[in-house]
Length: 301
Image 1 (cartoon, helix red, strand yellow):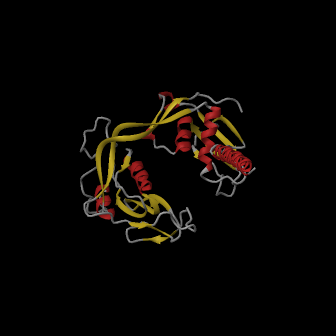
Image 2: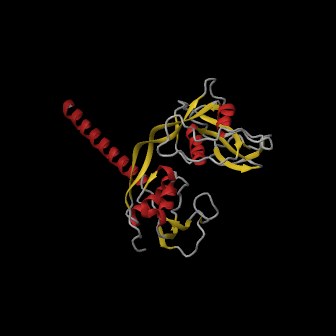
Image 3: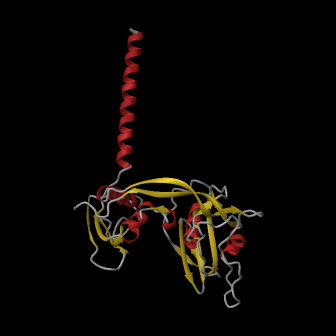
């Protein structure tokens, strides 16, 4: 009997474990596939491109719109990929434009919206993509010889940290000061200079902003794993993206100091002197989003 009871208990435990794993799998599958309740995709009626009002966090959380978007623009938004890291068919550069209005399910968050848009593109445009590492001209972001000057925070952040942009004012260089208790990143230009203000974000957030400015991938080689405050200001300057055949060591950045009428430093100087980091042009493995297949027009509503 004791042996029989033990075997019976083991069978019950195995059954319970299988059910638990099955439920966890199904729950994970459900959570990994958030979808719009319903979506209308029509040829664009106007010429102005804009994300319409609405969506989680707005006054109309139940609906979101994308106006006058090409399929390529929608891919950028859905996968949060910069243009220089997307490999897509040439026809997507001048494809047809669309207006999309979608109903967002109750309880959805801002982070759910890109996933919902991904699913919409998969269903209506039969979009298929994959990530691929390719060697390409890029900027390596490393720590300078004297170390980082950025304030570091423990990871994970306290539970009461809010992911939102709240500022209390501006410093003497015109860079916004983020209110304590908030984690965000922002970039703008004023008075002949550009600023980047990041509060309690991983170093990847800085790489994203620098990549947008340089129009070239910026790869994090700092080894910094925490969250940081970044306060960066530099001269507004025309910076050309690196050429495909750019040799290693070519910076692609203007080495000239700002004119006397503009006291702001160059981007290279600012990254080095204000953050204790260094930008260097190299050929590096870069993550690309590759469009395997897409239809020019969506299936009917």
